[in-house]
Length: 221
Image 1: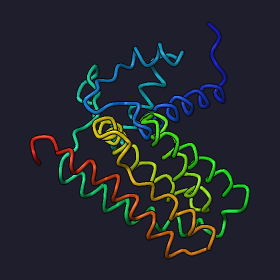
Image 2: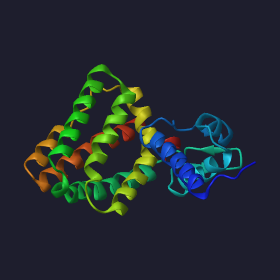
Image 3: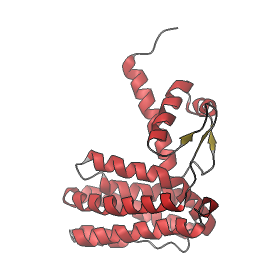
């Protein structure tokens, strides 16, 4: 059997990792799910090796726990883990948004507004999956405008850890009572108001994360 070129193999590994990351941050992987390397490999049309490598990276990023060769699960949300994630999000995301502000040009702002329009439709129709996708896209269109790739990667790691729980919470409570704090963020971007943008992002983070808090924690921890 002919061996795949190294560049093709590396690309395949990267794409598997990116696909699985996307599923976590948008809540397509549910808490308590046991992940099978064999099933994922079949679904993605790859061998089990890049899936194993991607899951190992996700474990290092805190998204999964590898409990045995056959048992890979999304770790539980505990009170301590929730507080840690909330604190880190409040520290990093408003600062990333403020750093991005000088780099958000008219075309990018237009894209951000279009995504928020789609998010508004998802809120009205109760489409949880579209809401999760649009919410992720809205935030990262802002964060990725700033030049620090390290900060964006750190924020993505946080989203990997809470994304599955947000999907459960939105599924439980619905989208009808969610507040769209994004309009305040858009107004701050148009006004080039870094303080207002930080405030809007912090409020948005708290609104979402506190829904997880209201839903309770495993074993009450």
